[in-house]
Amino acid sequence: MSKLYLVPTPIGNLEDMTFRAIRVLKEVDYILAEDTRTSGKLLKHFEIDTPMQSHHMHNEHKTVNLIIERLKNGESFALISDAGTPAISDPGFLLSRTCIENNIAIECLPGATAFVPALVNSGLPNEKFVFEGFLPVKKGRQTRLKILAEESRTMVFYESPHKLLKTLTNFIEYFGEDRRVSVSRELTKLYEETVRGTAQEVLNHYTQKPPKGEIVMVVEGKK
Image 1 (cartoon, one colour):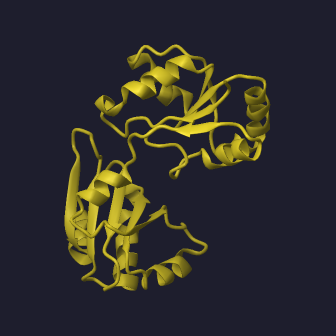
Image 2 (image 1 turned 135 degrees about the vertical axis):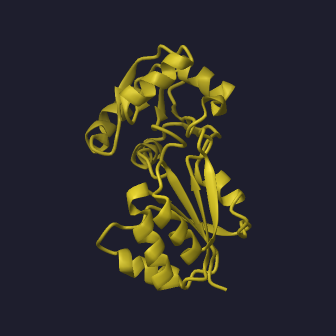
Image 3 (image 1 turned 30 degrees about the vertical axis):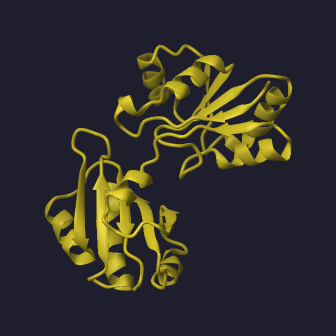
């Protein structure tokens, strides 16, 4: 039966790939990859020779209808991103929604997602939280921060290393310098670290030690 599988891939450590994910990637007709060069290394490591084609934020609007037609004709696809679970700050939502609109089966496998370990090891309340992904770069950034300043649940953000200091400075401005923050960097990789403290303390740390790698920020909600 034709189906779209959303398959998580490791965020760093290849040992986090599941047996089921490997099996599905070997069994489907085609793999849709955010970056075929990056995914090619992963597939080679696990001896997966399923054909790949590119599917990313710049071409998904052009290719989605063609993929839907191929699914209707009985082909099966697996969608993977460069790391983590598809559609979580990565391509995947548009294709999944279009499949549902066309009564095409979709199945999301459980697996690696960067914000979960960052949230759990932050030491901040995690029974209720909001995932914000990346903050707007320019337009709408101040408006979003003003809204989040009143958020009482723990907040989770993704951020790039060269914007971390700016974002921490914004947190101090809108949330206050004493708001507790946890920054996890390079999760599951060799130089993984988590820095916890007030927004000011964490800003001071990364001002002295410029960050590198993928970053997840977990921020205490308003008391």
